Amino acid sequence: MRLSDVQLGKTIRIVGFEGGKQLEGKLRQLGILPGDVVRVLRQAPFKGPLLIEARGREIALGQGVITKIRVEGI
Image: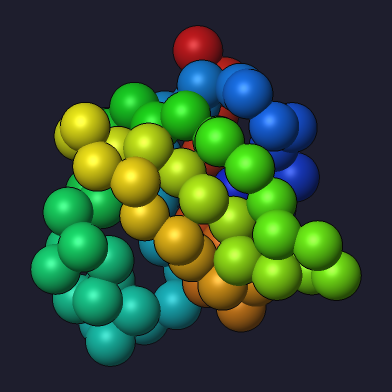
């Protein structure tokens, strides 16, 4: 399952990334790592950014990024 498929309010675990080294590096800089447990907070209207909570921080991720993050339910 991808992060873009997760319903609002759900808590999930990051499994991996499908965007190459550049995307993986960007997400690591934001503090998003495989194995992290994150909560989906809200979605901006009209396919805008998705707001997640990871490691006590709120992070907005665009549609292009969230389709490349693999997750699993917990």
